[in-house]
Amino acid sequence: MKTIRWGIVGCGDVTEVKSGPGFAKAANSALVAVMRRDGALAADYARRHGVPRWHDDADAILRAGDIDAVYVATPPDTHREYVERCAAAGKPVLVEKPMARDSSECEAMIAACQTARVPLWVAYYRRALPRFLAVRDLVADGAIGEVRMVISRQFQRLPVSGANLWRVDAKRSGGGLFVDVAVHTLDFLDFLLGPIGSVRAHAGNLGRAYAPEDTITASWRHASGAMGSGAWCYAADRDEEMNEIVGSRGRIRFSTTSPVPIRVLTGATVAEHPVADPPHVHQPLIQSIVDELNGKGRCPSSGESAARTSAVVDEILREVRAGA
Image 1: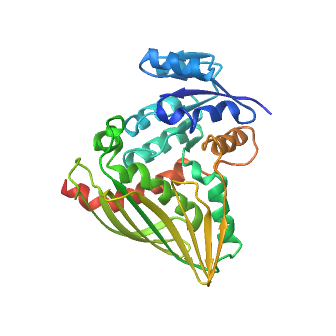
Image 2: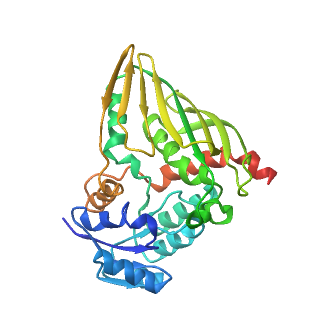
Image 3: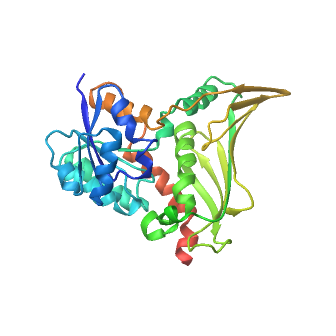
């Protein structure tokens, strides 16, 4: 098996624990270089994580002969640019989620990679995380019978901290916290129950702490026939998040954001299934990419699947964006 040598463009917070170490710890994988526009921060990251070299110019990553694939971990407003540059350089690319600020940017990224015959993956890591695969297996094994619907809800208190203000700057992120956080659930539901089709939604800014939407409700139908609904409020009185899959013989409750036990409710019986997350939650997805590049299996999170999630977000926010 060939060792896939990685370079990272944008070694910020998400790469500290969630993703960065996974490139060195996955089998047949190595992290050889990182880039950040602030060279001092790039050098500090490389020193602390044992990365052989650092750069302050993305071209040094894209043109390097000893880098086989690139992980783009910058904010969404630069995803299209860097993915297109990776494609032009002939580098397979993994880009952070959300894939881009809207689905039109996603389609441009897919087209660039297809033209260059370069693989494109998106860091919806829950598609490969054991806790979520356990949910998938419970559904597939008929633990709750036929799936009828899924209900998702997330509440979060204000304010957004200074370090995360870019997440509520629509020019950089594509919207508010819904675009940054809720996409994980929507993407996993696409993986679990099939693509989301028709969508009905309302969104608005009720907390008025920042410009984009902070309160959203939506309903939809999956390709499997299961129906879905969601409520998200990022200006609420408390932090709370949970999903419930409703079947013909029971329900499954699981969290997108916290590694709490999966609960299966059938009649008066409640069975808990504790599945711990690995130290670096991106690592199973990284492993699937390394394996794919070595001709063994396929990564479950492609540009095409991620673009579907962006299209759903676009539809949910269509009216509020038109009003803005």
